[in-house]
Image (cartoon, rainbow, N blue to C red; front, side):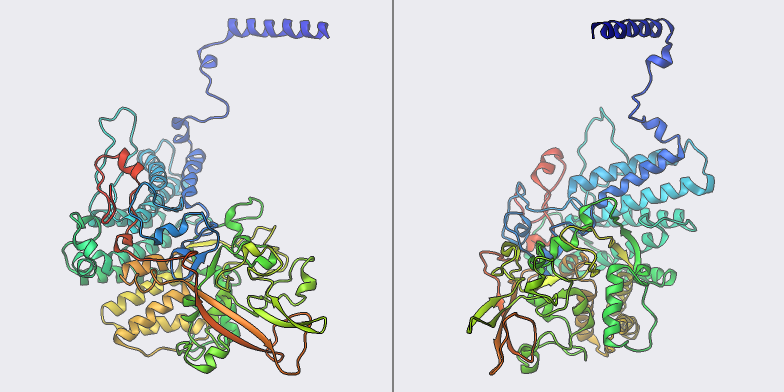
Length: 621
């Protein structure tokens, strides 16, 4: 052992002596093997592409995190306490504790990725590698799109922001930056998107990377928001004392200018998408059969069997890389399947699905109230798991309790030991399977969850992409601009294309009724896609939507006279079912809308870092 030590020591001394005597300056200054210098990155096309690819990381899991934006709206509630997600719907006034804010929209995180985009744009302006096959143009287009995307996240959540169009360096005189005006921010984003569309024109882009149509689609969204009530300060001030009393309204919207021109600009942007893409609209002359409509919506939600054509820009997931974005089933599925029931639909949302014939659902209609899940819009069946819905096989341990794989969210009579007893559904908070994960509302999310029985949500990752931008959003944007500009026939034409795809009849409304039908159509079609939160705010209707008390359903199944069943199954021939909409206990979910919540507060940490910032209205500094 000592001999081996001595030999090793002599070899080490010999090598050291040789290196000291023979090395040159290049050897001494060799870069760390695990790192690449910034100058090397931007002088090599492959490394530059890797750097631009890294900018996409700010997308996070898209909207597929455990806590979803849907639970800040009248789409859903979040089941589990202590996560801070409901804070945003409470009467808070302290920017030091702003509650749950996803990394896909947090002020600091967005600026981190804006900086990465600025670094790329700066270095690609005078590239040190040739523009072979247009790679410099492509990377520049991607960087400008991503800067615009993160900027639009700031804009739609916080209002105007300090425009930062270059990477700051060490030793600058000041790092404080004042907020630009709303108009300046919109123009900055649109300019980036116009540049991106030009640079990406004709480029073949891999799935998950942006493209020319994505730049057009994001421009359509930004200009639609810009034309909306919330961002026309005369309109917003007339509807909100908080906004009318704010000393810097230029941070929130346009203080002057022609609003009609803004709607026309938004319409042109939306029509550009329609003229350059087809989506999966199917170009139908009338409604498809109901079952086909259900499948069409499922295909679009899962981006399969033609539904992938809907995607303009998406965040993709693969099983090989087990990210939270592939855990929708676990995060939101029923507790009776050993899942967590995180974001569960509320009754208000369920009630807004029309009947198959296009009429409204009405609890005062005895036929509707006695069978609320019959004859509804096809998208209801593709989006919601409700009592009695057919779903996947349960785990082997629980299949004896439910061999059929039916959702059980009520309480039902069964016969046990010759007596009538109550069976609490397997998917309730009183059931025998992980009851603490049960839904408070009596519903579970189905949209975006792969129904393949081989995908066991409890322990399997799915590969459903998050639709950052999809074609139908641009169609709906176009419809809204047509209504605002008085072009009702054109609006109905495009709105009915969407309805035909899911088997719904044409609408013939006009005036305010048409706008209401459009708004509900957008609500149903874009469910859980992070649209509702922004739509209700920009339409300035949050008090009756986002601020509504959350509710659910109470379901009781009583055996019909002479019927007997020892192992429960959903069966209207055996049971009389009763349904009652009930409010959620305010101790669990107590929603209150205050007008200051039109915009998120800038956190106190950010205010402390940047003395030039001015806080949003209604929040103490």
